[in-house]
Length: 303
Image (cartoon, rainbow, N blue to C red; front, side, top):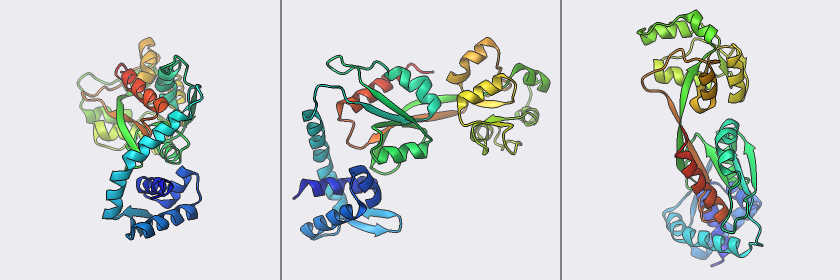
């Protein structure tokens, strides 16, 4: 049986789509379709059932994938190692801009291989959908997302939890004059009078916080200031533009110097989980596996 056909088959099985597998393999979609049909003729059995949005494996397809994939992954790892010219492999990384800039990249800068050579890094920013699509297509080696991917093409492990904090400039908090034993409904009524600083018109951070803490939707129809970067949200909130919900690690310094304060702190703060995601079978490659292990160790100290 042709190993190239098996490699294409495993890629389709993991991607759930001829089109996504073609992008990952650097082939045309007709070429992938032709290879799968050739393999099905050789085996005398269908391996996939065509659906409106991709393909699903047959029982025979699942069995073949589970038997073949580990061996193909091992062969890829051997081939990658055999082609090493002594230079460290570049790690292509993607994820949300603030988290990569503040957490991930500082942790990876200076990471060395077994020979003491510094691993080169290339980072790209994007939202979860962009990041996962690029990873599936082979543009990145490792990605950080807040969404756990489905299917078998990508494998993920939890990296860390991020606490979200409600913040505002001191003048806004003084104006709302919250009391120490106010009911959440009373607090909510005052907070809903404040302007909002957000990353999108849909108010994703504020809406998530309101739902988790107050079991309600925010009264604001849109943000007074909308800017697609949490670091800019932080800067605007410090200058008094309005209320914001930010990761604690990002606003800790501002809280420490008093340029931001917390108008309400719930007993159980909302959390968001980050996942470290790679294409299935690639963590055996030294430059990817080493980076994943290093980030997981670093994340244990993040708060």
